[in-house]
Amino acid sequence: MTKEQYVKVTDLLRKHPKRARIAELFNRVLAGIVFLAYPLYLLLLLVQKNPFLSRAIIVPLDSFLVLTFVRAVINAPRPYEKFGMPPVFSKDTKGKSFPSRHVFSVFVIAGTVFVKYPAAGVALGAAGAALALLRVAGGVHEPKDVIAGGLIGAAVGFFGCLV
Picture 1 (cartoon, rainbow, N blue to C red):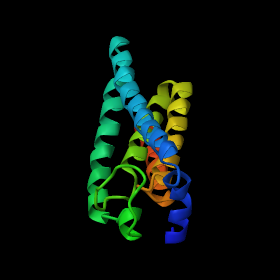
Picture 2: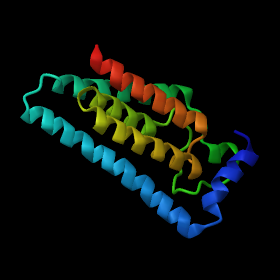
Picture 3: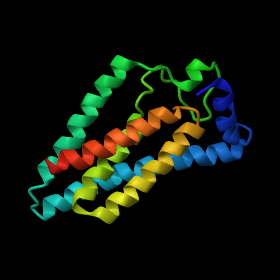
């Protein structure tokens, strides 16, 4: 992503402060919905005495820890660092942009849920796609960060739970 592309994408919100506040709120609400849905899903599996419960915990947890380590090693700069412009969303983290951990987390949960409840997994995946778009428009990630986070998360969640 070039600086011109970054400016063009983020100006959709940057030039409209009210729209930017709504987008940032929507970013938080989407993440919150998914991260509330996950414990409810685990509770459902527990109540059902479903043996899948352990996998539904271990796969997202282990992959989250591995991804956190990988991000620290790669330590890619955030677009607002690279281009010397503040992000639209409130954020001051340095580095650790690739891959997006927010998007990864949503998609690993979506992939895990999809194995047992495909419709719910697809709904969570749609929330993840919207979150990915918001993270780019909010200036905290580049498209490659959210695409990688989404693809890795979905694959790990789905295939990790099948193994």
